[in-house]
Amino acid sequence: MYGWLWRHLPGPTPVRAVLAAALVAAVLVVCFQWVFPAVAPYMPFNETTVGEG
Amino acid sequence: MSGRTDTVRPPAHARPSRAGTGTSWVYGAVGVLGELLITLGVLLLGFLVWQLWWTDVEGDRVQAEIVRDLGFDQPAPSEGPDDGVAEPRRDEPPVLPEPSLTESFAALSVPRWAGEPQRPISQGTDRRTVLDVLGIGHYVGTAMPGGVGNFALAGHRVTFGKPFNRIEELQLGDALVVRTADTWYVYKVTSTEVVMPSDVRVIAPVPNEPGVVPTERYITLTTCHPMFSARERYIVHGVLDYWAPTSDGTPAELLG
Image 1 (cartoon, rainbow over the protein chains, first blue to last red):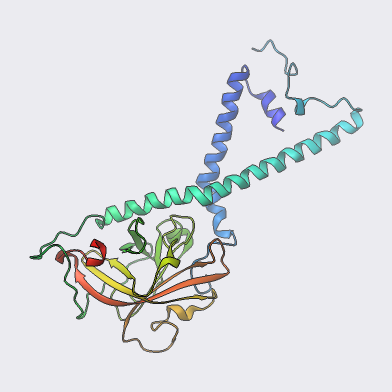
Image 2 (image 1 turned 90 degrees about the horizontal axis):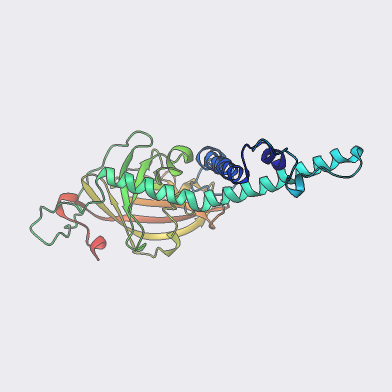
């Protein structure tokens, strides 16, 4: 999977490394910004209120 | 760069298996599965970093911004004749009407939590719109600051800025200072308890006595207990000690 990705990135090794790092950073940003906040309320901890909620 | 063929030096794990072609796809599938599992592990680690660290960074920033926007970070302009200490008043305090959902209308300062910033209080206890983004939430339908009944608040004990992180440090008699645009309300802690999440009696108009008509002005804080668990709730009750107009100075508890 990652081998395939590496082979399909363009350019020499340094350029590929930079591109790969950029891809990793992009995934992290998407997770921090949208994925994790959307998932967090379903986690079984962190409830602070009394009542049905 | 295009002179190189794709297979000149692929990483070791990506090199085609030398085993018979019949089994190579099995190795390929196992390899992909392994990489997926590693990825999943890294993402879970990322979730932990986000939950335990980044939500605090974001929460602290957003909540400080709200307090700034409300103008509550400034010391109240003192028009009194004295040293800037607000004169305690124990007559009928002004009580705001309940604001619309998610509106920030007050801020909480707790002298016992030295080093903790002032935290905004916003209407509602929905996680997505209030508790996870704005900090402390006010239970809809409970009393407003200074009102007869129970001014009930919820806040995170860990993550999202963790406004109630140090709740267990509170001792009987400690001040809980609530500020609205024009008024200080100084409550004193009267009791703490640990209850089950379904025990709504703690936010009844008279705490723990649902159905009883209140005559006192209570405050109740609710948060999770133990830390990092949703098994129980840590509860702090208090009662209004005095109030003062913000134009009169700052409560002595905050100047201490």
